[in-house]
Image 1 (cartoon, rainbow, N blue to C red):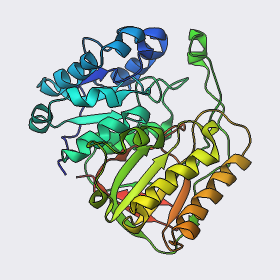
Image 2: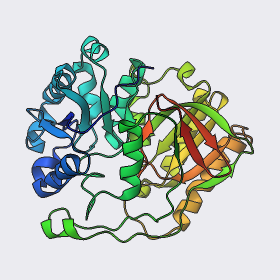
Image 3: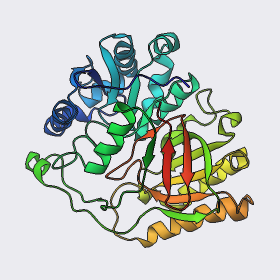
Image 4: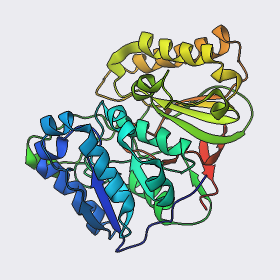
Length: 343
């Protein structure tokens, strides 16, 4: 895998809207995220030509969204490409991307959720990308970026040397504060204790390259040339997360069964599952998700030895860790940490 150069203060980063045009709908939220980039990280920001266009226009012009990505990768001044937010149709822009331009100009790509499609695309080109915060969900966290999110991201994209990411101990939040009310931007969301990462099964530490992402986005890629080959899963640590817990256990179970039928559980070294997204107040839902994961992997596909860790701090949760796509991770089942060489 090609690992793009790390970032330093005063580097220029480009912002892109790969899917949903939320930056145009909630400008105060977008500006809060931009301010974090500038003042907390010291980056210069270059907005791509279509990144702030209205959502209906962006929805009708997937080729323009792809052009922004290509323009950012071609621009020698730009050192990283950061998504404004996710959405639900970034798969539509893949066919407009130019492989040669990206391969000849590798640089950091950062985002999560619907950005999964672009992460898989870059992985298949042999380029590491970073599954982590977006401008509006992460950088623009109410009251400023969460310490855990900031430290994980900074280690991954700005620093050299080994990195060990431990589970977040400060609590997490799913409190809803309306982005349409600018004053809410200054109110810190309440952190909840409990719901820490949990080892469901497995009794040994493992290492493997990271692949995965948002389950809903991955489902849109299956059956296309843009999805993984079975050999991509060999000796991998598969990370999966659900954007909306309200999709339910049945959806989660069906997706897992599909991976089982593909033979994925015969290939991977471990399965790690992110804390499901959206807003919920019933922890028993998480218990049910855990039971379904164990049932599918251990009983239905006969892999009771495969390490499974649930409720991890990535994806649609806050704060979140940043995962380097395609890089080898060492999973310690004792402290549930992930260690990377991070060269």
